[in-house]
Figure 1 (cartoon, rainbow, N blue to C red):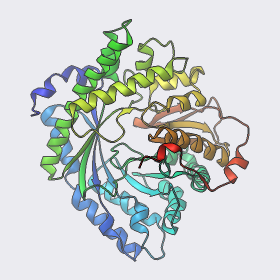
Figure 2: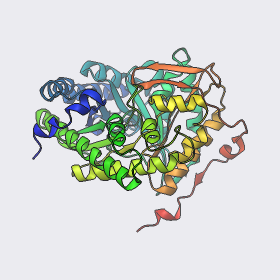
Figure 3: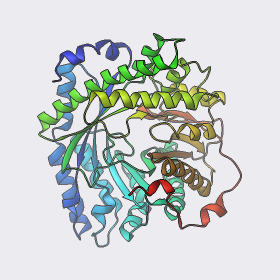
Figure 4: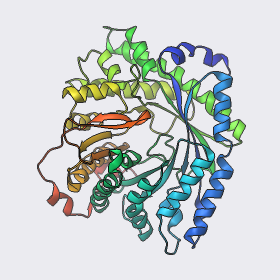
Length: 452
């Protein structure tokens, strides 16, 4: 039984090592909000979210005060809106994003995710309507996040969707050019997307979930970094054990908060996602963990091996601490949100190709990376295809969140503020992949998909 004594062990972590509950995310099904009238659908969406999540922020703050645990974000995820909007006849689908935005503002949450479509094997007219509305939706709202799943190990890679998403990313950047392409920071392109991810921008409430659930995301790069200082120079066996023990303690804290939120809100507990999600704050960096293992700079030779050890040990420690570990659980490597990654990128040690190699062993993929504003849509699509291939072949979730920063070139910097941070604009290969992307069709599923 988890009680307050489980938390007392972590007070030093909270006070000195940036440990926090990164998010309490309430997942809400909108399947019962479908309606032939788009206006009525929007009204139903707004009403249900406000009814279900009206106490979410209040409850989170009460738990913070009671246990002394910072809960940085309170968020909502919803059923992929493309599924809900499929039956709407006419109208502008972006109006549903505006309904989500109003509901999120009314509830007081930081973000709402789920303006999403699942098109890994093909797309319906409703899917395409939503995808084409993403630039407008993300430029005209403040709190809405969007994602599109373009590939799975089971289905292969939908290259028509990949090509389309390259254009959507470019248009989204153009529509938010006055904010360094901020809209793209709220847009993720997935392979093998999971249904219980509490982290933005890729969160959505899966169709296999209950009507409403509570998922918690815990993050502790600073805690792991501090723990590894105690085993400096020791063999990797001890490094892995140290990370596992630390992940165990952090996950127990997350489970306790999740249970408390679940009971007080009268909503089922879903999962604890133990993901080392960094922030721009010094001392809260995944890159610095890898450097503490012995690398001079993150991105040099050995980085992928170090990240593989870290990701595996985090998962093993978390699974021992909770019977419901889910989401993505592992290590994130978002460049703009990690001061160590930013420093390595500015030094030139950490390049896009090395980041791609690292995504083979981390929790997600190419995340919060700024590239020149004149990068062609086809190049962005090709980067998405490369990352999707890594996910499909390795049976893991991968994602791309690129920001083609309008008017910026290599060496410039984009500034988003808050947890989104800032990032140097990184180079991409100038050689064209346009003819490759233009082929369209579907890259077939690999042999790994044949498991029945």
